Length: 125
Image (tube, rainbow, N blue to C red; front, top):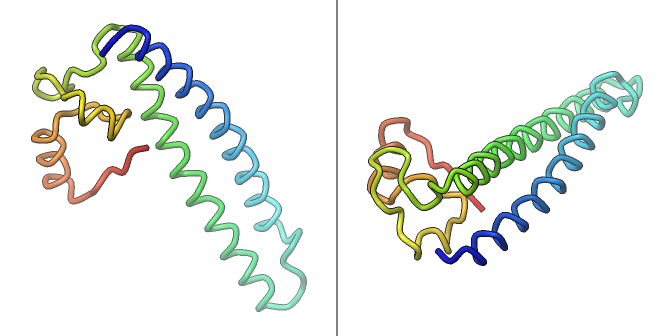
């Protein structure tokens, strides 16, 4: 990937990171309000709804924190000059894959193997 493309990607990732940090902060604050009874009322149904909303806020914050970690790993790889090299096998990730999944740290083969071993699909940008 060209240096100017890497710089543009890094700038976009830094901007996305700032947005995510704000969203995580807001979701954690809202979850605290929901769980402390700030929106739960006295009715058990209202309290149950507030607890459910708090759980959703925490799940969304967790998802965003995982994306932030992926962004940080990608930015570190760009800084180290290793962006586009599979962290598992050391082979080229492939420019087409990086355009489709800019946060991809593994080649398709290694990513598939990782998902099969862990039984999880790791969604990226």
